[in-house]
Image 1: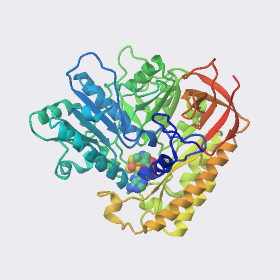
Image 2 (image 1 turned 120 degrees about the horizontal axis):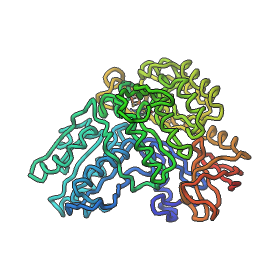
Image 3 (image 1 turned 180 degrees about the vertical axis):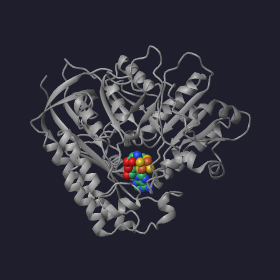
Image 4 (image 1 turned 30 degrees about the horizontal axis):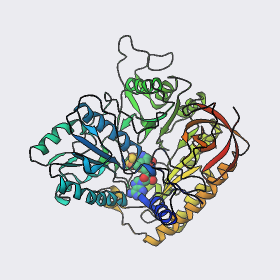
Length: 517
Ligand code: SAM
Ligand code: SF4
């Protein structure tokens, strides 16, 4: 087996291999597959991007100061870091990939599980030497951990000068000034309106082919295990015009795939005035209230050459209207991430998911009926408070029912302040959580392989994203159903183009084939 470092594409030696294996597989409690061919990242919570530094090209004016910003957690955080960098680039900051040479270090954090926070704390320790050498350096914590811990962060981490929540990024230039003036600064105000709709994120770390587009912020769902409603505030939808304009702009710049992002995209709802001379918001209509199905359609109509993906769907909210819209447009990908969390109705009830096992199965049936060739992935939590072996088994049988293409599987991690932390004891012993997790991971591997095998002999339309991480002789790209596909390079095609690939063999996470046109 050969494993390559995903950042520099160098072959790892045996020592590094085991180190990387453990780090990649267990970091954040997420499970990722290392296959014989490649480490396959997911795009929405991409483990290979954790801790990645964002680099922008200089925009012209410079204040002579350098910003180092690295991000953890979900795609929303990576997208937010681009907004932060854009706000500071306007003020003349240039980005650097070396924190030792930075004037400002920002770490954009995730709070979803305890180990995500531990990782950030450890990383902060690594910045101490740089700050010692350059006492004028500003160290800031952004994102969910900043929002959760607020000013307490300044007490706990003496190194930190500034703590900024996800709705306060426009205030960053002022906050940096305050720190320059010798004070420590905090802004963790949450907003009911902020969507950063007018800020065009600069995307220079990207491959120029796929981009994330934030369509909403916050979450009103209050799942009992989840910290997000506390760290990201109330749900609000972004102006539909600005979403479509951003997607058009991306398409004009050569991007060929957008992923619309929100914690619960199905509850997207924007009402606004149709500006004079503006195009109608939905096909053949002058509606001024836009739901998610309408928005999907509007983005799909930007160009048939622009692929549209989205994440995350909530089982209680995903409508047949959305499914019919996906079925209607060839460029809306046949792939739905539909987190189940548990297959047992009592556990779903105390998780406050507001659906039960039957409802979830009904939504799966609707997907299979309306979009027969749709891939489905999920999130599962094992060992939630009071979960019995029988209840865990309901999750296993749900996996048998759906045969997911892919799954993120986590052990329950109690988060301070959440409803579950207040109401229920975290009473499942660690070794039982681990045993249940291992069981569903093994089951999922079987189903991922089963789904991949079913594609053998089929022709997949693939958007070429670049060279395979393993070899410059192979291209990689994703199928409509979001499977990674590897195939030999052809001079006739380049990244950003679509090709038809005949699938000849597979691993549990990759399709391997050749171009047929
Ligand atoms: N909004 C999405 C939804 O409703 O499915 C997901 C958001 S959350 C960032 C991603 C996943 O993290 C969740 O679906 C859940 O499986 C997992 N998660 C959230 N809180 C957790 C906790 N306290 N312990 C373990 N996993 C958790
Ligand atoms: Fe968290 Fe539930 Fe909102 Fe998802 S829907 S972000 S799991 S509260």
